[in-house]
Image 1 (cartoon, rainbow, N blue to C red):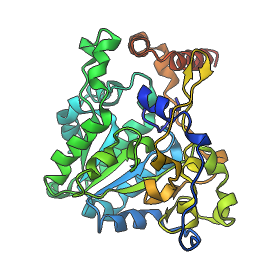
Image 2 (spheres, helix red, strand yellow; image 1 turned 180 degrees about the horizontal axis):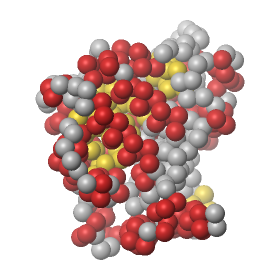
Image 3 (cartoon, rainbow, N blue to C red; image 1 turned 90 degrees about the horizontal axis):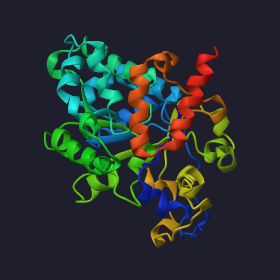
Length: 360
């Protein structure tokens, strides 16, 4: 089930509805140089030479190309020699102890393990696509070949919600600070312990100049930490139009990584890559005023690099297993949570998906 990389808070939708139409202010300086494609694993590892935290945007949640790259990255022997932790959006921190046991190789029942991704603050089935379980199992397999002191740790970044005590939309409000919770975990579990971490989150959680607080803006707020951030705008209109910025993009190897500062891709307006979602109020689109600083943003103001996964036409999306549609306990759980959260559009999409599965 596809879902946006932007944060889901309603305040963000309200503030950003006018962004796509905002004028871009010209800047002085030398013309940008052509962007260069780099081998992406080597580029990520190079970023860790100067940064304790590297944030890799997932792009559209569920995309297989991004998943394949992440698997290649963690399976590279240089990764575990360089990185200690992987902080993920798709896991409830309430189950951190369970995840620690699983990742180090202990026996954990499948029914217990799936609570990690099924019970996050996100009511929709975004993390029920099998690629997220596959990622956890891939880390466990990598750790099986490593000494205990070099094993990777997966840090679950989503707030520790307990759905058993959630009875209303009001009960959900205490769990809305997802970015703040993740930033606090990264400070405590990574930075304070002088470790290195790869963050895997949706793009909108990694904006450096935020409309609301993001993980990166919170970590960098004091000036003591600088996060190396990697965009992956594969589901955005710009992904189909990169050749309009630089005509050799289609010849780049897939995947590739390009450093943005001072380059053609970096100098392009941020709105070219990330046009904002629309907010509908009373059946009509509503525009909100923008801070001046957002009117002149370039991509390089928000991210340090771009992960190129190919044109949108080649992107494939993972779906949740159709078998879940025929599991009454699972469907009751998902529909109850989505109803409490008021996400009617996602309820409709889940029902349509399951109706199609029933006809096959």
